[in-house]
Length: 413
Image 1: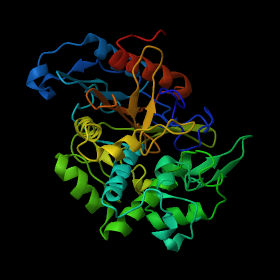
Image 2: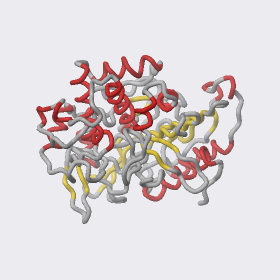
Image 3: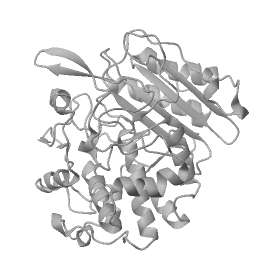
C-alpha cells in the first residue's frame, strides 16, 4: 500500500539527504536539528481524563524520550483508545532552558491541514455543490486548468500539477518554486502569498504528467481545493472551516491563521538549521507566515484537537459513510486516498490511516489512527540546533513509536 509509514516526508522537496520521490508520511526531511540537553519524558496527569488519571506507561515515556535523545528539541504526544488516554512530553520547550514542552501546546501542523481541507470538499460533495469527478476548470475557469483534472484528482494527488514549492525530478533535475527551504525560506519566512498567486505559479510550469496517469504529492492540489471551497460556498475558507468543522467539534485551539505569524497560547519553540554560504546557522522559526501553504499546510492545532478531529472524522461524524469510504481507500504508489494515507506499518500490525505534516521548518505533526478512529496517536515534534540526519534518525524513531502504540511490539534498533 504505497511507501511505508515511517518514510521521511520531503514535503518541501529541497533536502539533499533524501530524494523527493521518497514520499510523504510524516514531517518534512528538513528536520535537521535537535537539542544538546533534552529533558526527561513524563506523563502529565493534569491533562489526562479521570479514567486515565495516574496511568503509568513507561513504554510510551521511553518512546518519546528517544526522539529527544536522538537530537530533536522536544516532543509532546497523546495516545488515546476507548478506555484510556496518556499524555506526555520530552525534551525542552526552548533551547537553553530545562522546561519540557507543554502537553497542551499549540503548533504548526503543516500538511495535516490537508485532511481538514479534504473533509470540507467532501462535505460539499455530499451536498451536491461540488462533483467529485467533475472537472475543476468548470468551477475555477480563471486558471485555465486542463479539462481532464477532476476534483478527485486534486484530493488524490493525481492531477499532475507542478508543486509550487518546487519539484525534484528523476536524474537530479530541480525546478524551483517559491522560497521554501534553506536560507531562501528563512529570509522570506514572513512573506505573504495569496492562494491565486501560488496556483498561477504552478500553472506557469509544465505538469509532471497527464491528469490521472500517475501520482505525485503536490501542495498545489490543496491550494486549488481551498479556492474551490470558496467558489462553491461564497464564503472564505476560514469561515467554512469554522462553521463546518471547528465549532461543531469544539476545536477551540485550532485555527487557520491566515497571514498571522505568531503561535497563540502555550507552545514550544521550533528551530531551523540551514547553510549560509560556508557557515551553518540556526534560526528560531517559531514565528512564520504559512500563507505559502494555503489550504495545504497552514493550520495551527494541539494534540487534543487533532485527536478529537480524526476520531470524529473516522467515526462518521463529519461525512456520510460512502464518502468516508472513498476518503479512506488507498490509491496508487503513495497509498493515498482523499486527504488520508492508508498503510500497514509492517507484518503483524494493523492498518492505520494518517496524515502527518510539517511546515518548511521547526515543527512536525503526527496524526495517526486505526481506521475506525478508536485508537489514535497525535503529537508535535520540534527541532533544535544539533546536526542530525533525518533520513536515518526519523524513520527509526517513528517506526519504534508506531509499533509500540499500534502493534504492541518494540521495533529492533
